[in-house]
Image (cartoon, rainbow over all chains, first blue to last red; front, side, top):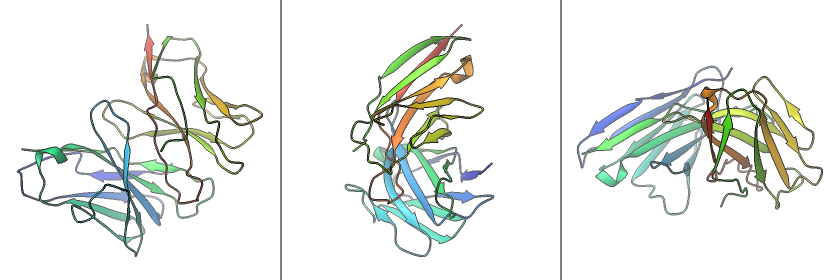
Length: 117
Length: 111
């Protein structure tokens, strides 16, 4: 079945530094990828939609200069948390939609737990 | 905003069927109902999806009412490993392909 690899699975960084998270579709092409964040005991909150070769579309309230998204190929999207602060600590999850569309599902990565100290 | 309503939590005895309800009374005619589950600290896992007809796969069955305003996910023989948060999702109507998660149902399977 479809597999999405997300890396790293866990990262600790210092305040003020930037962190890059990668999301790769391993056995299918994904024109669209999605980035979510999740706080403890809460549901997933959609941050942005990433389209291959174009600018990402951010949900209301999500700072695009804070969370940089790049989708340079049909199999890779990256999320960079810039100038990270402790309040950015969260579980970040990506999802990829098969380029064939239709009823092909959305496959999720295993998530990245970011801790900013 | 999520278009679905689910009970916050449910319990189920191991080996018994788990029936998870979902209300989606404002669903549009061409919108699919998706079910995912999330085991603690992992990414969501696809379970099943459907439009009008009931669906079954190796994991579960999906029963959609005739008016499509609600559905039920059935895990026929729940195991302890089925303990997770189950999300019922209706795809956003303007075909942006987004999946908006609601609060889900926390299913606890007990021995």
